[in-house]
Length: 492
Image (cartoon, rainbow, N blue to C red; front, side):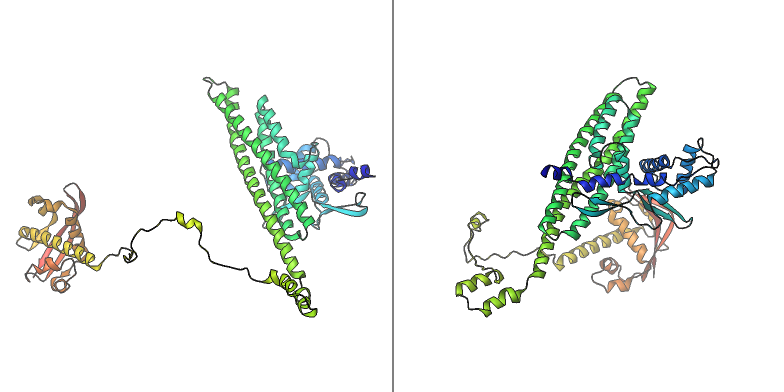
């Protein structure tokens, strides 16, 4: 009896894979005909449609609706059947309705599970709604997870080993120089990576929702462990493939003369390198997610079981009644209440303290460590220095004033041979005077901390105000600075 039990292990998964082919038989039962009353091979039309959606995913074309499918069927079947465009549109609608019912519900397969001895039902979906164009009123479709499994099942291997098998096939195609087929193989690997990502997302939600016992936790833990081990093996194989492609690219690129065939092969290998690097990056992120998923499973299991225990625990019945209902020895009562008591604490000296930095000083020498602060006198000192500089500049400029009590910047620099007129402070002096113009001298004399207090105070009330006007032209101050030409007017 044990032999038969082992033979029936995984019966549900086997039926699920067989149920994927039901859509072809449903299409075959439609018994559609063309204009000449010739029967249409709807079984083959269904397979063509599935291959078309898969090819569209490889080509990264997401907006596939009834019109696109009808156009493809017309190209493939136009020479075999007599139908107009409307007939192919109707045929495409029939195919999509079989693979994805208009109600939006998943397809079902009812059967008797001989492994469990109970009737069972399998739900699956070949197509899923991918996008919707509200303006045109067009629904777009794409293969669902079971639709991809159907494609892989027609190749005689299962989806969980798809990436490993694709890696082996890619290696063989590269060794034979079949670069076009290798590029297509990389595209299939990219789709498989996205499929694994969706599957892991579903597992994550199921873990957070369904772990309520140790058995459930162990089952999900085993599933996650299998995914993680397989991803690690595939990651190592990706590294070897990338190394092999780089060596092939360097070998082709090192040749002095390239024929047209070799030049095309080099372009293809570069493209394969770029595409595979992207797939490798996506796959590496899956490996990281699988590690996080293991942590998520442990945390979710612990939290679920903890809160389930808290909910089921009755403190009054389990603790209070046992302590007060029947007399218990003191030692037994202490043991019963111990888990609910606080943890004892005490302070002690750690031996590791001897390794800490020690201060060797006398106890009476108390050290105080404070942050450095900028005193207010420092700011006053800077103001005094600037006042002295601007007073010196104005003092040196006054001998060059004209009879009309004006000083022009260009004439000043041309006539005066004083190095102080080539400094940055000289330029700042003119710019600040221009910004503050007109300047009332008495007002600045009354402000002790103003930068022009000393300069205007030395003028002994010779003038009442100063106006700085801007003139055309640019002046170079000893080839270090450039500024607009200006004129300073002293008014009485």
